[in-house]
Length: 270
Ligand SMILES: [Zn+2]
Ligand SMILES: [Zn+2]
Image (tube, rainbow, N blue to C red; front, side, top):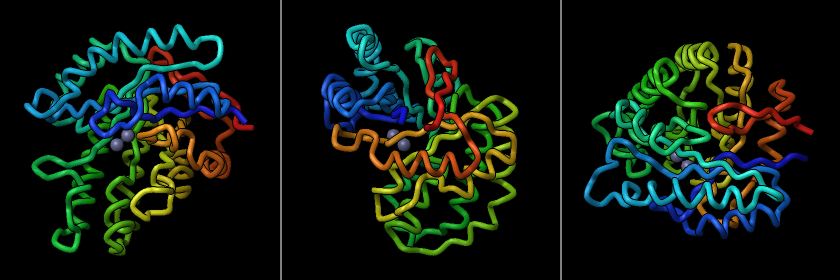
């Protein structure tokens, strides 16, 4: 099995526990063929006073390419970023993507405009249906306009709504909107990430997104899927990847991708 983890956080993220070197060593030990670092760039508060990434990312942009050279004989290291809330400052997002010369960009939304991160919400006190409509609306805008390689953890709010807060949602009411997202993404050559973090976080117990959406993405013309663990420490690198690969296969994909200099490299799903 070609194990390629395209979504990982190091100590260059506010919530990452291990240094890039520790992450790379563990990935090599596990026999991964490629590992992409995707530390957070939340553009909505990139220059905020408590936001240490605005200081760390320029360092990462020097350190990770060095690591890439050092490990080139055993592990293909990629320097990517998880751009959070792209739409809240598209000009800054575009500027930073260029400035850091990224291999890979994940477009994620952790909070919709004028709202807090879903992580901090108590959905018993909120209107989950309305928030999901706003959320998928923003993901549609990302698919239509953002400079991104994939859509990150497409069903992120469900980790908290149905996972942590145990509130049932009728997802069928969003199917058309999600189809629109997928068609827009497919048209622009944007891929879909299968984030296995959902399988181990917040009691959600599903990939993010799950099989039905990966299949729908393919039906809408999507050709690129990536698999990412969303590991924030060495212990979660490539976690639940068997399930992730099964989902991609069951949805009809024969290959998964990772990115170098913003171009997909396809690898057979064995
Ligand atoms: Zn994320
Ligand atoms: Zn992440």
